[in-house]
Image (tube, rainbow, N blue to C red; front, top):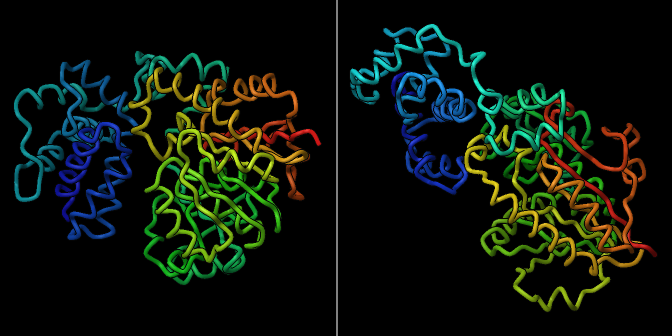
Length: 431
């Protein structure tokens, strides 16, 4: 593809993302490229990076366009991003030439608005803080309460593209085996700093097409998510419940920790997600997992009271910790979403509590940075369930290296730890 064709494709992809309303941008992108097989791997990467760059800077770009009296359409957002990168008016005209595979020419009104951006950079001193940090206005006070004086540095780190993290599947080989297999495919992965299973590549890479992934030797999983599984302390022979298993990422890590011995129940409310998990289990060589779709008033769970050594609640959440990977989620999240999720999280914890045997652990995790979903949930749960107490992080942390956080809770951020934003706490039921 020519540079102009890549720009036109990025505009089309952004239109598809905006038109999808509630669907995540990465799912929209997968469908977009699946129906355009003629776009090669290098072009897909370039088009995705251009579109994701606009999504990461959308509030700032829209601020500039509003100042120039123009709407934030996908084509104007892309054009504004190019100008803020230092493109000239002439270069922009060549990109929007209206020629074969190129975007349509800019009309007079578009040219006049974009002329206000020539020579500008993306940031401006007059921008409101929430715009500069790419936040919904309503969430700014909550993150100020979380980060205080370090808010700017923390949120700036979340504007950077995320690396590609993988977990070596110890059921198939060692981390060094996985690293060697990836090197054969041309990927020089580096061991992660905190997870003993993790490997990292810079940016997006098509590893899923390679033998290392197809054989089940590696799985894509953020390092922070790997640490949540690690904190469960799952061991061979245990009975473990993954109550919100989704597509099975943490279930796979638990199975490897348990060396395929013992029993894991992977539950979720979504049949399609559980079906997707089955394919991952087979590829990874996992065979100690039972799937179960949860329904309202589920009798299956009621028959398993005090039946598990470990219960993991990787709760549905706002996903504010994953904004590096899902920048479109910033604009979709509402206060109503948060209010509904907090109620749902509390209900899940209450449902999980009786399933933990005496002396067993309830592990609660989110990929959120908001106190309402994290510390406040834990304090309220312990107040309702006096039989549970927080296990200090130093006790739950089983690695020789010191835990990445002090205190009782695991709280990870991209700036401090290089992972997605994660929260995790271990709660022990009195023996």
